[in-house]
Length: 485
Image 1: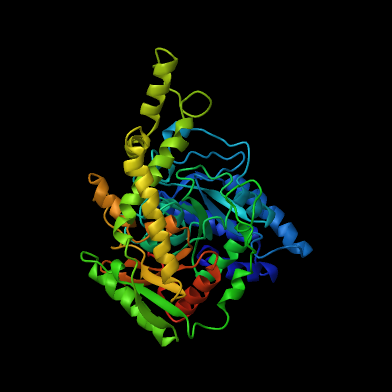
Image 2: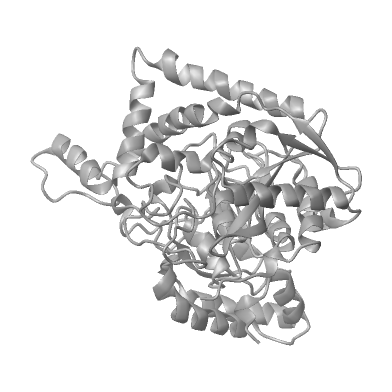
């Protein structure tokens, strides 16, 4: 049996019955990684020795009867989440060789649950990108077509899950960085409500938008992982103390009577016709299961991309000011004096996209432009949130495509930043509003490329998202398909 192809819930059941050991899963995974990683480049760092060490501990826990459902399950971690004693670079040269002295809260919770770590996954540098082409170290490929991008910025995590190089993974989502790569790679990606999951130990890109979430092979696994990583954390001032339900209990009861909103602004000219067809077919399936469709409007959607790329870059400009070569990470060898060291270290350490966003953000925050750009973008953000608030007065969830097209070819948009930024046109609004959203596979386009369906919900109502996503998943076969790599 190919254990690496199974899900968390399948493997957890087998472990508890004593049919397999965690070590067997790790063996299967690293054989798979050895076979496919050269073609995919999903990982920045592999933690083979640590994985076997953790697997041994997990097997002992299982024998003692103290195991939870994540005990012994191998998980991959995006390289912007701090891991004590394991290199964490954000795929940037400026953090080359950085080994954090502490764990992020989500890592502590995974360790407490008995999870096994396979390694740190590749990403767009500092999570800035939609294609994982901005990594300073590697070019991750899409397992469905290695000439295409895996999405970004959590492209390494999504590719690793899709290629069965891990059982599940953690990513981060600032403007679609979990959902868009999940759609590109044919897996499930959840962006929880802002504040549901602790950001302590997540290297900041845009602090008011960033959120950690799971990337998994099916909806059940996503709920199981959120059960572990979610909940209040006193170390994170933006973490919210809203009660944590058992999300795996969300699947019961079906979806009869659930009101699904279809916003006209998300079905736009230029959207891939196969994406539109797959999403419309999915809506028909949900109606067949008892959901009630309602046309809605989110009138300020057209301003989301502009607002996002002012706010996110402004926060990035502030957050990335700390990387100056003085204390840790990369330092230039050619400095004439202290000031020159600062300039050269940042010039040589940051990649082109990160520099672009720092400059955009610094400009938006500068004297004379703050009111015209940053303040105006904050006002637009409020209007976008109010659009969602009004919509959720009449519907329970909102259905849209996750991305306007399937995965595009590597290099296709690198020379046109605006086209690249529009890859997140359907996901950005969710982050601006702080609401939860999940992307699930809903079809395939020409070239056997996956297409994602996005379901968005009210603040802290992940339960309804899971219920709808699970009902759809059980009525279709899209999530069971795997790339032939």
